[in-house]
Length: 322
Image (tube, rainbow, N blue to C red):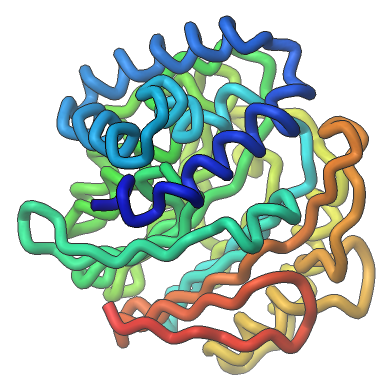
């Protein structure tokens, strides 16, 4: 159903990545295919149902299975040092959120999937056409955010977007921790999981290692570099400044509520911004424009998923009950 209903959008997304994005990768098409098939083998070992699902999406969309594998592993294939996302979690109010900063074209191509899994768990996720998941939450009050990290080691683990899907199928934070551990270390990303009881798990993968980041004063803020001194990643543009800006926005706050979350994520008035106030060309991507495709905020206690499209400080939010 996914592949059939979104057939044209999935095909358009694949063509965009093939002709515009992967073009800036040092890998040629046959190398991308080989890498995608190799990563699919890891996914099959992790959970064969996910490979079956990707094959079905490919069938419905009329594309080759390896092309769907490549979309789900595009983070690992590209590993591009692009200024991306800012994520936060407030333990006091159980509110989790982030900006998703990526290519301008994905603002219109991105989708929201809302579905019931085989265990009867309701899941909602903002993702890219053909992907199994990205940022999202489920009806157990479990939510997950993602920040890309850049490191030079081989990215030969379970692709991070597949890991996010597995997290969204978990009923508890402890189950999510087990899933993250089982997925291995061959990735370069930060995963932030929060739950409706105020607990969270923040883990960085870089250099073939992983490390946990603890919250500060009941809040956790992360951008696109490692915070735990036991691991390291490449510094990419604006990541240090965005982290400082978000932390400054928290200083002196009395209430860590939805308004505070939005004020920080949508701050476009100073510095290298937590939200990219407009799209701007990225040299490492051949001049393709990058900015905030979406802002997502999840009230894990109320089971509410809020999402807005595009950059800017006054977006309209769509509210989805999970």
